[in-house]
View 1 (tube, helix red, strand yellow):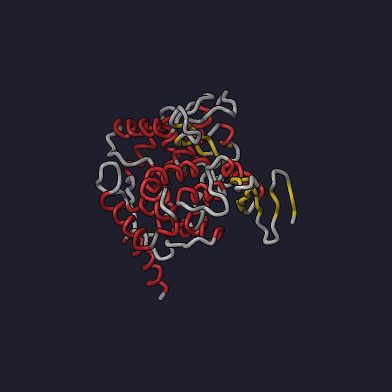
View 2: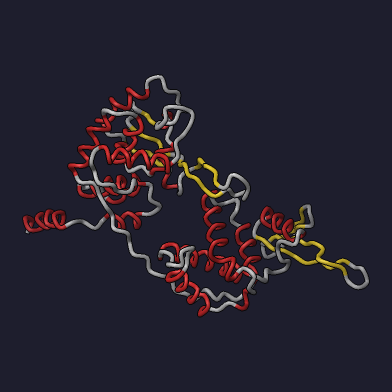
Length: 369
């Protein structure tokens, strides 16, 4: 066995074991119990919690204890936004009904009933949660229970649970006439409005746009380097303030990408970039950023000024992707331009060609026969 400090050693099965005193016998002898982990760092963190009585030793007993062990194993490998999302889902929906229950007491019927209750009467209003939210809650719970089965040989009642089917939200698009109006107005306006046009012709996410600096924009090469995103999350420290702004790498490795700049925007961008240091944010032309919620309000005002019916900011990205498909951009290239983690996502969301496109494609077949 390989041994390191803090009473932690590596076992022959590849796991790390940490030992701590959990009590004393009647004779005053120390009683030791163990925590296990796949890495030294995780084992050290678990040992600290066990010593404070915040983590069960040997094997987690309750769902809350198992969740803390599961989260510790991911803390150093997931983004702050993901960590915050897990914490929020557990505290909001799982902790109260299951946190203090023993893992052995759960069964598939109980979990399926819990899923149905969330769907039909969950949430603060009691009106039920969306299928997407219920899916996220149940996937988190299933992952925690699978971890318990693998690491601690606990029963896994989540093996046979079913997830609610989430309906794909209807994609709303801007018409060609509306896109033309947006283009004409934005090219004559400031950097905030130009950001809307930039999204319509590059498919950037709102967080990526808010994090964009002038150093990311290469006018000579006519490309944008997308390597950051900006978002607001619940404060991981659980202290004031309740939420914090985070600037981090995008949601997946594939979201770090290079996107071509439309030629017709170069003159307007060059005008705004004059004298701007690379560290200044594109939207504010200063060292201070604007966050997505504030920018979404500016976007709403922009559409109202043009008498264009409101659509979510993400509709700009949807419109860009759909027009790319119509113009014959291959799905693999489009997936890379959008920063999707797989081509499957692009296919499911955007390759649902309309009747006119189907007719054009069939015309090629008919003329060839």
